[in-house]
Length: 365
Image 1 (cartoon, rainbow, N blue to C red):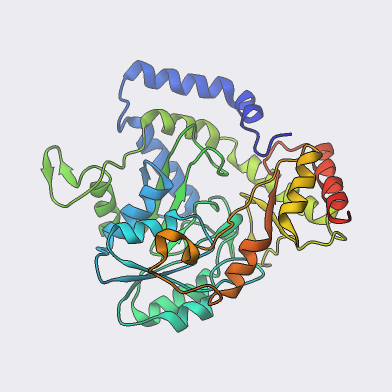
Image 2: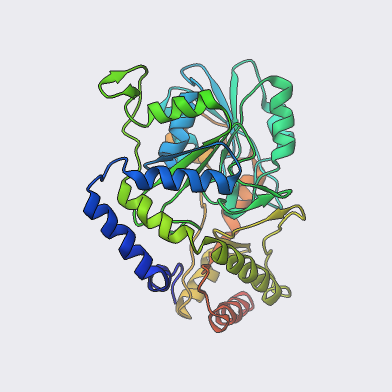
């Protein structure tokens, strides 16, 4: 059984994918070819914003967004510790300080109440993460940000395709950032990412930053990075974008069915807010004695993963950043108990039942 199944997806899009790749091979514009503009326009329309900027990775998307906001040494960014390290890594790379606050124990997303309590004179940005495919409480977060005149960056690396109160993830704040890592709901065949905004000035800055700070060739108006998305990856994403709505619907159906199959299991299934839809980038349960349960599942041929086992404030790289162990109890509790099960749009009903039955057995040994 596959944790994520990209081969079945490839078989479905093979003809369109090969035609799009062949087109790139024939026109030869491997960097910033026409597929980049097509992808940006289609993604921006889907998200409901004026500007989409394709970049080289989800990490670059966050970095470029922060650079466009002129983040630098002495600044602070309020964010969650229960996420992949890229969220905080980019803050530190710019010499700024991540300020980690605790999470909502139901959704695992950042707590707006904790954000409000952490705002100080050096706070420059609020960066929530829409974890596991469900948006954070963006209205509450935006309201806090507005009171303090702060921009908000939604780290939507796992939530492109999800909605919050009928609005699309990536279009809910000052800047939305996503990832096209192969296992994401919309994944390339390599790294990739995108930034989204309605702000003309920020869009211009991000386009310049991703291309070495150029406004035209060999004329550099700001410090930038080599953060362009390859044209071949854009072609791949365009082929996948055609089936993305179907895959989103399949993820929603599979997520709901998992929760039904596990309703009486001694574990906590994902809580999805009534105003949210999730793309279930992961289907993650919370349970006791995770390592033993994961081992029992492995013995039954069920692959699992942990997203994420150590909160960022307890990672060695942020040892001097804090807060210390025990200060963010909900993040620590989540990190100690979450376990992700196989989840992808091509998971068969029989396979899903097999996973659920195996988990029942693993939990009742």
